[in-house]
Image 1 (cartoon, helix red, strand yellow):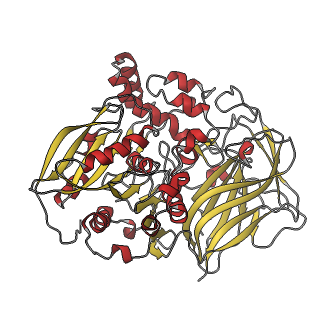
Image 2 (cartoon, one colour; image 1 turned 90 degrees about the vertical axis):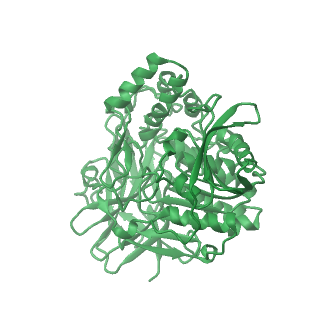
Image 3 (cartoon, rainbow, N blue to C red; image 1 turned 60 degrees about the vertical axis):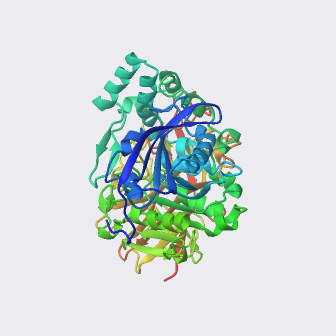
Length: 597
């Protein structure tokens, strides 16, 4: 690891240092600090995964302490050593505030506090940002791999569809500690048997060295009604019933939406995310909303964003992966994030003028050419939105159809139709997952299905850079009053390999609003906007752009049963006849952010 010249210290650890939250509940933290006189700035992390998991002398907590920081790792409320009952996400707003101010008063602290950490440890940071005002002792943050909208990409997804491929496995994974604390040995041993036996999730190694969960068996993913899981896991994950009951966005979820609290954000943040991260939208959305809406000039000018080519679960000294799924993105994908974090904290907490504040605010990894580039903002100010229209004459069903994609608008063309059967959903093949396979996979097996419409461009003649948010505008109808439409952006290599870049989904009832569901009229055309989040990819000469349209991506997302029942209530699905329009008065298109060259 390359580190700038800094004074290095021996370190000492203080175990189980207590903090009394505002309601009297005691939370415990381990403190790793320089073994030297004087006071130092504090870096706070809060975890539901056991603070003892950071007892690695080569890990970031020790690294930061060796270079002059008091590092604090606190067990979240109701987890491991800390007291109280665990209520995931929402409890971290108040507890995070209290932890910052407590950390500022520690005998080894100089009163200046920053936060750091990945995944849920990024969540606990974003939840601190949902306080208005934020803690006065907090001066800087660095959330890694975390969502900023916990309805849109924690429990549900854009359009209101459950992230079924990870919600239940993750709830059980965390529920082991809940059962053990409650001394429910009978349930704990049964759950532990599932975890260790592979029927429920267990951490495992993947090709590029990062971790993933072994998924549930298919029968568990297909279990109906979904609300049964709230009963099955009521002692392991008692919060799950509320999450299932609040499928619509609204006040319940607004408490955990950083973008809705952006006005009160008062500190600089370094957001780190990645193209194949399950929470990939988090850092991008938070960066943009805080820059636009914060009342603090220091916060607006102090937002920074890094977007890499990785998946989500990486070794703790993340990111150190150079690929995810099938593709190795090359040695340049490797970065020393801890060195970047040290420079970030040295500037804001030690007043060291190391030049980091003068560097471009956005750094992204561009796929295809596999290189890093710096941007003046996100989304890129110079991007040009280009419409690639969907076409077909005989039918776009399967890879063998005549579905085409071009910048020429349609005139009069026949519709494309397919039958979506919830009992035979399109299987997920890689993507922004956590408990199922992550990252890049060949999409051709899915493209052989008759319920997948495939639209492909002619080969690209010159390198085409696509960097920024991607959407699909889809005119479609259904024989059902509620259904789903999915879209996927694919880079087709000259060999035929179909590399997934992005995917997205919209539940028809949420076509106008994620908080105000409205059923369709059967067989009436509607315009659906499918948010595919964002990417940076160069389509190289000879490559082709492809869009897949279907109605399922399972178990990444739950199956819409086509019945219009409330989420979690349905026990049986019915097939739906889906129709996609592409004609002059109903143009369906892919909206790509093209960068001029």
